[in-house]
Structure formats: C-alpha cells, structure tokens
Amino acid sequence: MSAIRPKDRDALVQSLRAGVVPRAGQHLVQVGRVKELEALMRDVERIADSGSGFRVVIGEYGSGKTFFLNLVRAIALEKKLVTMHADLNPDRRLHASSGQARSLYAELTKSMATRTKPEGGALAGVVEKFVAQAKADAKAGGVTTEDVIRQRLGQLAEMVNGYDFAEVIAAYCRGFEEGNEQLKTDAIRWLRGEFSTKTDARAALGVRTIVDDASVYDQLKLLARFVRLAGYSGLMVCLDELVNLYKLANTQARNSNYEQILRILNDSLQGSAEGLGFVLGGTPEFLLDTRRGLYSYAALQSRLAENTFARAGMVDYSGPVMRLASLTPEDFYVLLHKLRHVYASGDAARYLLPDEAIPAFMEHCASRLGEAYFRTPRTTITAFINLLAVLEQNPDVDWRELIGLTEIASDNGGAADLSVEDDDELASFQL
Image (cartoon, rainbow, N blue to C red; front, side):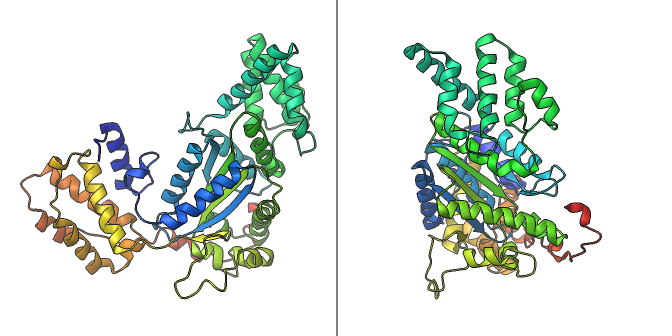
C-alpha cells in the first residue's frame, strides 16, 4: 500500500474514533460486502443508462449502513452521476405541511456533489455548466443563448413546476450574461427551495411557484432531468436515518411519509423517473414492524416482501430491499489490519501493534460482546483506535496489558427511542 497523507489519515481516524462515518477515504478501510456493492453498481449503471433505481438498505445500528451508503455515493460520482444526501430527523421528512419536507430538500441541494466537487455545494456549478454549453451552441448556431436554453428545457414543461424551472434557469443565464449577481443568486435560491413565499419569488424572478412541502419529489425529478441536460449521467439521492419516520408518534404523519416512499418506489418500478435513483438507509424495525414500520403500510409490504425462494443461506440482491450481511470474523480481521495501517500513515515501520496483537484483541472483544463485535462493529472500531492512541502516546506500555483493560460497550444505537407509543392526540402537531 502507498503512503497516506496526514490530512487524510487524521480525518479518517478522527471520524472512526468518534463513531461517525468518514467523509472521504472509505476505500482505505472497506472490507467485505462485495456482492452488495456489485448490486448497487448495477443500479448506478442502470440510472446512467436513463433508467431508475430504488433500494432500501437495512442493517442494525452500527452495522455500517451509513458507511455503505457513502461508498455507493462515491461509486456514483465516478460514473458521472450527481449525488445528493441527507439524514432524516424530526425537522426533515419526505412529507409534511410545516416546512419539514422543504427543509429536507434544502439539505439535499446543499449536499449536491459531482466528481469535481465531491464535498457538496455543486448546484451552482451544474447550472453554470449547462449555461456555458448553451452559450457555446448559441454562438455556433447564430441564435441567442436564452433561445437555446428554452429549446433544451422545453421537455420539462409537462412536468410539475417544469415551466417555472425553465424560467429560473433562463433568469440565471440573463444574470450570467449581464453580470447581474443578484439575479444569479435569486435563481440559485429558488432552485435550493429557499424562497418561503410565492410573492418574493415572483418579485425576484417573475415565477408563480416555489419549492414547497408538496412539490419536493417533483422538484427532484426535475433536477434529475436537468443534470442530464447539463451533461451528467443522472442523479442519485441517498437518504439515511429513515428510522426517524418509524419514530413519528402520529399515525397519519407516518403514513403520509410512507405514501411518499410508495410513490417513489412505483415511479422507479415503472421507469417513469428517468435518470433518478434513491437509496434509503434504515434499521430492521423500520422495515419489518407491522404496526409502525414500512410493513404497516400494506402496499409497501407487498412490494418490499422478501423473495420466498431466498432461504437457507441463499440470497437475492435484485429486489428493492437489501439487507447488509454481517461482517465475518475474517472480514473484521482484515479491517483491523487496515486500521493499523491507516493509523501508521501507510508506513509498516510505524505499526504500533504486532500481527499477533490483532487476534488477541478480537478474542478479547468476543469474550466481552460475543458475535456482536463484528456484526455491529462501530464500538469495537472506536475501542481499537483508542488502544492505538494510547500506545502512540505511551510507547513504554505493553499492549498485552492494555488489551485486557479495554472496555467495549454493545452498540444499541437509538434503540431506546424505538419504544415510543402511538399518541395521536398529543402528537397531532407533527403533521
């Protein structure tokens, strides 16, 4: 392996030590789940080929769902897709009437990433790429840039908010040509869903609609078409922490969100969401609970039901639900070796633990947690990095003594929150 830059090493180590997924460098510590990644790569290729995709990735707390979703996003970026991602929380949902859905949309547009801008904030760059192409074609054809833009965006007119979407892009183009920064800023604000009233949007851009709670999914479909017109392969939307929908106490609010998931799934299965893919991350309870989870919504239960033939160790990675297989002890052994390598910045001479220490650490974990140490590895990874940190700063200490002192807690994530009971009267404000 090659040397690892201090900046990359520090970012990776700090994230893993805190129990959160690193924003970059995941490939340095990726192990196992080859079949699952291959299946998602096929989804990415289908989206890039004008198709659509929909996956619900299911795994226990700490099992690596978020890490897996980040890997999928990295693959999508390499295939020239535009990606968006966000975590759901009480203030960000797929369906709402008090701004929570628009808040989710705003977070998604903020995170918009391309291969040249993987950290997010790529929306303005995508629009400028489209406008620059239109300007070049207009010059070659002897017509105005705005005429070219309107002709290219004509196919969006039949979609919800499509006409106003085209008007906003044309307004950005005018701002681009006239050097009017305010007009460009207003256009990007509209695309990000930052206008809260139609009056403000009309005064700034001359359009009659805004992105509101009811039009979030339609706006994502418009963006998927637009990024393809700008020269990208498609749009992938990754939503994590969908267990927050499961936690909604109000039945009507929960079902409204599940209805939106059903709409997205139906569009994907019917191929009407061209160049658009969704990957949703959640826990087994979020999927399987017949009282509060996706299975509580009959139409979703029938579409997301497991393949009855995939039994006795057999798997089917082609369905909409993907259960993350547990890491094996062998995978975990490789993972700890990779963590040791990353911590030493890729220099084997700087390893803080000898090879025999890794099986000893795994045996200690197994005696404390049983199989959970490799099935939900988050806390075990944190403990291993803490061990390396102490050895680095106390070189005279014997690693054998430290391993025996290592405390490892089981990872129950947000399980305590899952006992919430229905209370429609008290929670009616959540609609």
